[in-house]
Length: 224
Image 1 (spheres, rainbow, N blue to C red):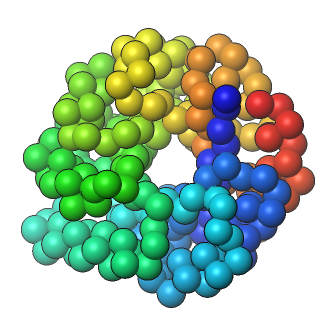
Image 2: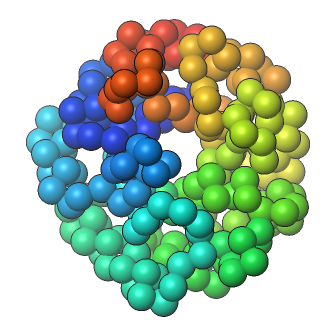
């Protein structure tokens, strides 16, 4: 059964997405930076109303690249511990080596172990990896349950063939989530061509908003 994850950049957006039928929420802050760790106060606000929709927390201390200093790495670990106590259902993060094009297996695996038994997604830092198939094997070895990817291209629509190759290579060992420009106008074709079961979207319509659009979420759900 296909599932729709909505990236939400405010508590109000998360409430809207849940009410519109999102299967899962990725909670983050700072849309203009591509998403960073949200304030810890947001999760209890949302959980007070939303009990049945899993909420995964983005763990990303800043925008920019995905190579983190030791200080930033310790900050990421502290963020996971804090959100675990608040009832996070899972976590989303991605760490690359200093070269910026290969998965930091050791430190990613450490975060996965820290978050256990909560599931973890390796986010779109994955699309920066030089060889996606090698990157997939690296992510599998870390224990991440899923990979958010646009198939190595600027958008999931452009990378649909690469997503299909990842689905085949993964062979059920890790879930491939298609993300990057996914909207109602392309979600059906992305799913059909790539074979992905999970799709990820902010459901933002129009450039002036940072909130999920209820009708867009409903429309995407109806097309899955």
